[in-house]
Image (cartoon, rainbow, N blue to C red; front, side, top):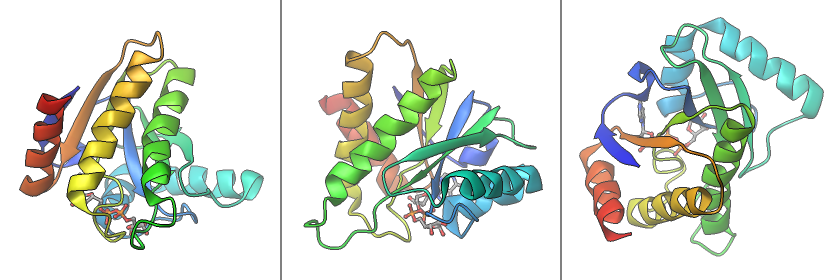
Length: 170
Ligand code: AR6
């Protein structure tokens, strides 16, 4: 596991993870940036997934190609909206990381880049979210035979410092 500060749309990984919403139709934040940089094929693929499977539930993940991005694939996961912590927000956030990695493994993808899911518009406390992110990725790696390179791509310095702290800590 590694951490960098920067823009995830510039990362040439096998897959980058998108912090989407259940509609999979795009939005602001990292979702908006990925759709803008990746072009319309990503949105078309998302619409086809919703037509087939319905909206994407919180904590789950789906995969599309990377369109015009340097990444080969985009894994779209829906983070929980923070509502005080009594609505299974922590479990759902861990599910986002675990289910994204399961999907990546199923597609034989080995380099994966994550943003700080739910820590923007969805208001998840950054400290808690960083601990959950690092623990969920570590648990997945320890429990599977997959050899994966996971990079946390933090847009802001606060998240960068927190992820760095938890990478050292665990
Ligand atoms: N690269 C990496 N990280 C980024 C980038 C980027 N280009 N841009 C923003 N971030 P948010 P959420 C960081 O709000 O909280 C959307 O409208 C940002 O600093 O993008 O999961 C969706 O459609 C923050 O730390 O996602 C949903 O409706 C982190 O990405 C809703 O927002 C996540 O912030 C999802 O909310």
